[in-house]
Image 1 (cartoon, rainbow, N blue to C red):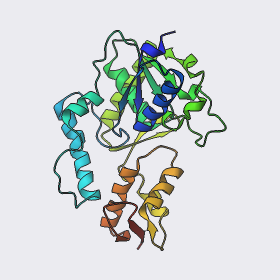
Image 2: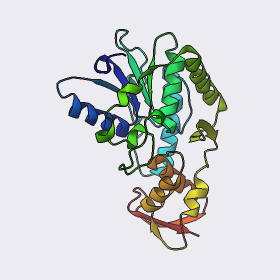
Image 3: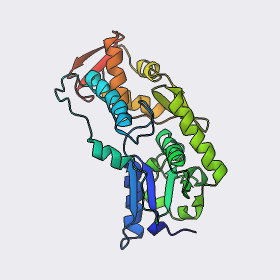
Image 4: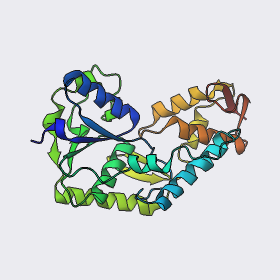
Length: 268
């Protein structure tokens, strides 16, 4: 078995990084264990290899357009991240002497991260911890195999599940990355054990159904919609879709349109 303390642990999302960091700091306080995180939401927006300036521009332009709709009063034209930060987040030039362990469960972002690394790092050994192999503790609030929702207090023994991603499996994951890139759709969900590309308005019907004829705070509608989804989705993206529904005159609003906690919405 590889030494988990000498490995780089690859995770998706700040919550996943926080859970794993908490576990390491509690159980290995004298060791400096490296965690590398992809912070961006890969479940929405154009997919590409994220290895060139043009890849970055395509992705960032999409999010700038979303920002212009969901926060029209924002006068800044700057990207939400610098190119150098983006390259560091999506890096693939890891030190060759350090084993790479990819953490993934039943989460859209985690699976897409896994597929990307297997496609772009196909000539080196990769290892995985598949949280589907690790039963959810009945005491945990969330019944999910996503690392982001795992309780660090209930992770003892999980490193017994580290396994090498064999060639056939790595090839399958790499083909999934190519399939998703070629789909050209702007939203993706994890359903029945597979990442599926869907239309950009996939969540609109759910958002509309969770509204009523009475005004509700937008954050409540977003939270309810997130809770009812089989697949994970970010609140920022749903906030953008609410503004689309408002622009389509399917919803009406009152209050401050720049923050989801200060805007109230209802069906027209």
